[in-house]
Length: 254
Image (cartoon, rainbow, N blue to C red; front, side, top):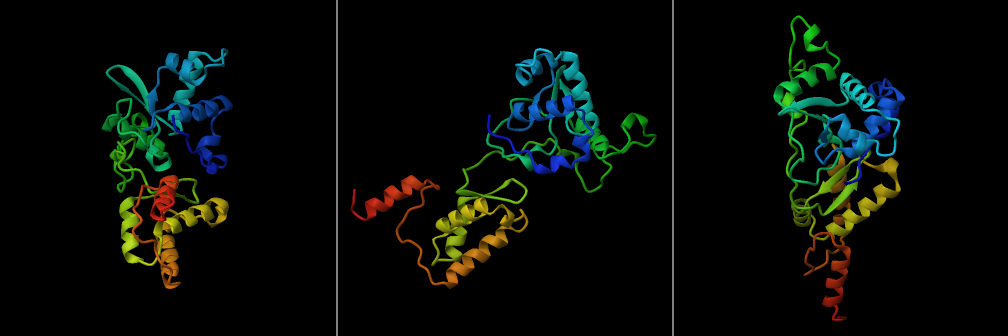
């Protein structure tokens, strides 16, 4: 299971801080338990073994209550498929990197998602609202929540850290396009320089909306310096050691 990102904003989140200590611990453990699409079994017997393997004092009814509390706050969505209980983290793909092509668990139905949208946005639960609106925000689409993320394609050339703790993946198409726009620049090396700078100076990291402007401004400055991009050097998918090997071959050393 890949590492998961938990943002520092949870310290001030009203939703998260409304949870009890056990509910918060359950939430945190579930983040590490779910599959790459943010879904998992909501069967307390299964969760007891996977989520609390060393906490013998934790009972199945404790887990069931914690799941219900997490759904009331909009932290998770509980649903059933063919009589089996499941849960998912809404908006999972906005905060985590999806690396697999298919979820291990079935997706919730549109009606389940609409129910979460209503409760999760602070509206009255459908059963207590005389005029329930399954989609209280006219600009949001229920299918945007717990949706199937785009299937993973080619691996990124490089990933640049952003100021919210996530990453901006640079595709090979991006690299090729920038290499054409800035022919005198070794684009891949400059992207590595950007990644190193962002990694060592977290306060200088960019937003997702501003990262491409940052990249093109950087490359434009390098182009103006009159540098020269390496010639006849094939791109090898961001593998530093393979690139070093190709360079040694071109110099006739091996």
